[in-house]
Structures are given as C-alpha cells and as structure tokens.
Length: 211
Image 1 (cartoon, rainbow, N blue to C red):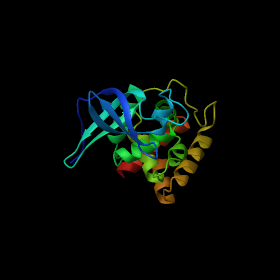
Image 2: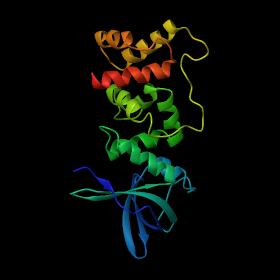
Image 3: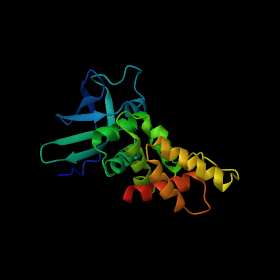
Image 4: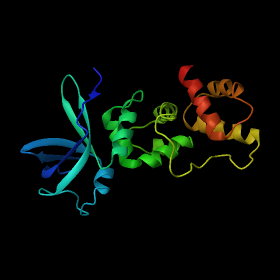
C-alpha cells in the first residue's frame, strides 16, 4: 500500500536524541518524543552550529507524515518548500522516500527546478541511486509539478542555434542516457522542427517513456 500524508504539518520542540549519522533525531514535543528523519540540507538551513543539532536545541520542523500499513514515518524539513518538493518527488513514478531524501540532500528545491526546467539529466544522475532511466523519467514526471525556478534555467542550444545543432544535442543527451540508436532515430524523426534543446529533449523523453 502506498503511503499517504497525514495532517501533521509541523513540530516545534526540543531535541532529545540525535543519531550518529545526523540523519535522524528525536524531537520532544509536550512530553512526547517524535522520531524524525531529516536531510543534511534541512539541517544546514536550520541555523544550527556546524556540528549540527544537539540534545537541548529547540527546533521547528516542517513535517511530511507518511502512514503505511507497517509503519508511520515522519520526515522533517527546514522549509515548507522542501516539504512540498519532497511530496512531489515521492509522487513521481518509482521514487520512494529514501530516494527523494537523497535528491534533496544534493539539490535544493530551486536547484531541482532549474535541473528539471533545463532538462539537465546529468545533474540528476549525480544523486546516488539515480540512474539514466530514472533521471529521464523524473525530467518528464516533474516537468509541471515543481513550479518555476527563481533562477532562470540554462537552456542548452539557446541563442539562435540551428535546428540541426539542437537535434544533435538532443541525440547526444539521449545517447548519454543509455537509449539505443534505433530508439533515438525513431523519436528524433517525430520531433517538431522548431524548439530549443530542453523542450525537444523533454518531448523525446515523454515519447520514449510510453513507447
């Protein structure tokens, strides 16, 4: 059964315990200790000492509470935007909480928006556990779900590049993602004549995903 988010949105309390790797802590709220999984990114943005949280620190965490048949898990974030993007990630095909946390340990929410908007599969593959096919699928799944980045994306092939140059860049990107030459030739033949590299790459990935 797929987890669903509960109504717990945030917790404010005192740190009672911290795991050795810093990825889990117990936050005591009103005499109840809540075990919360956190990312290094969240901890960096909580204005904590360089060593991270310690017992006795007061924290407020934005919470994504997943209820499953076999467990209830709290995921803590420094901002509501981190929590929202985490929810979008675990809603994508093939992405569980562990992989979503790994992605948010490497990319801030806005960095991830830029990655998706620019079709930067290589940056996604830099996340442990994200292979070529997963990166390609995420570019498609997240294209309309994360919102616009506050930093304009780098558009490969922008600035008046010729159509042939753009298609060559799309071909190179698909080869790097591991697609076969036959698949690439077929999808390239169906692409629109006009468009920048990021748009055409996203269209190609969408068509390959359903092929």
